Amino acid sequence: QVQLQESGPGLVKPSQTLSLTCTVSGGSITTNGYYWSWIRQPPGKGLEWMGAIAYSGSTYYSPSLKSRTSISRDTSKNQFTLQLSSVTPEDTAVYYCARGGSIATIDYWGQGTQVTVSS
Image (cartoon, rainbow, N blue to C red; front, side, top):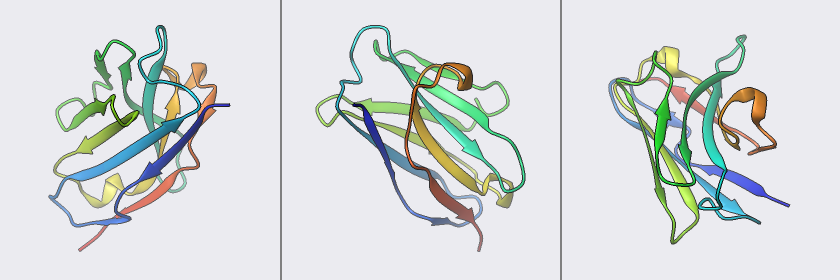
């Protein structure tokens, strides 16, 4: 059973960089064929796929967020990380990490973590 757990600050100030880490257990992030995504859900809105990192280390980003988003990994810790720069209150959302390369292909989700952007 694969388990994912998000961690990071729940409050970020405008213009700063949001940084979240996803710790994976029960499976390796380098297992061939698997992709690992970050997805968010702003209050009252639907799910938004932000980007993913592949088992190979290749990264993929949503075009609307690409200029502000970076996804990396630490294979020794079986973790992958999201960085979102220049945040605004519109980036307030529940952030999820998940296994799968798109929302339609997700088979395991983290529980989600609330991030609020406010001064």
